[in-house]
Length: 296
Image 1 (cartoon, rainbow, N blue to C red):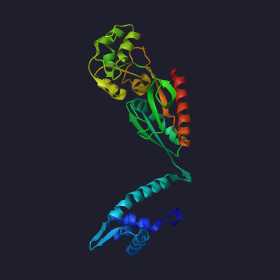
Image 2 (cartoon, helix red, strand yellow):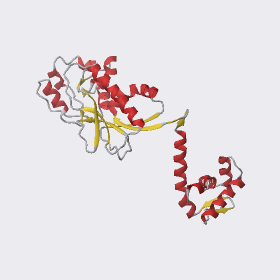
Image 3 (cartoon, rainbow, N blue to C red):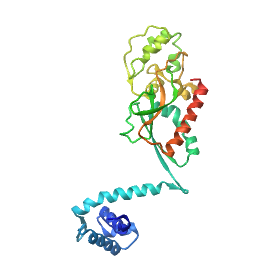
Image 4 (cartoon, rainbow, N blue to C red):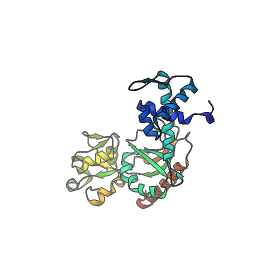
């Protein structure tokens, strides 16, 4: 059936009646009479040469033919409605799907999103967080911000900035730390990267102790444990600047180690949309400001 000949009124009448299993309720939804809905459905049945409903004394029963037709119509109408909803003020709203490491989302990105919204009001940013294990294709993402060395197969990666790790703890613990050797005597909170604490002790020129105990898959969760006095976290001060500024956290030593950078990534096969270009340019600008401010 060619598109100009699609019986749109009849299809709308059938779809509404199928959802409600009632011509009367479908008529109320479509703001027409019950007779008009029934007439449109009959026209569609004649056009298709198939019975779509069994008319019962107390309602309708959809036939196998109707059940086969319904999902395609519902999907099509939903997609049209979603597209029309994206128009506002004469502009079409563009959807941008971004996945990011939770630490960067909470500690750096979210505080800047109001600026992005104000600059690009017609971009709908849909943000999801992860623990750095993300499948861009499977999750249907336009971009993912990842932490690492930038070498991912079939991924285009643009460096944003490093996030060196340092010792973070509450003041009651910080007062007990007169030198880096004292850190080894405290409960050490760990991420799933086993080389981080040995790396920090090496940078501090201290023999690393055996590290046991709690392991976290998120720096946000690990630092929350540190805020509760559970132990010492090894996390990026840049991502927890608000806690440091307020005094909730202390950084007792300036010793830092770098284990990678944050990268804006996308599939090499994914053509950039206008919304993607807007976001990339804005994010690159904000990352450059951060690099200049903290000297990384």
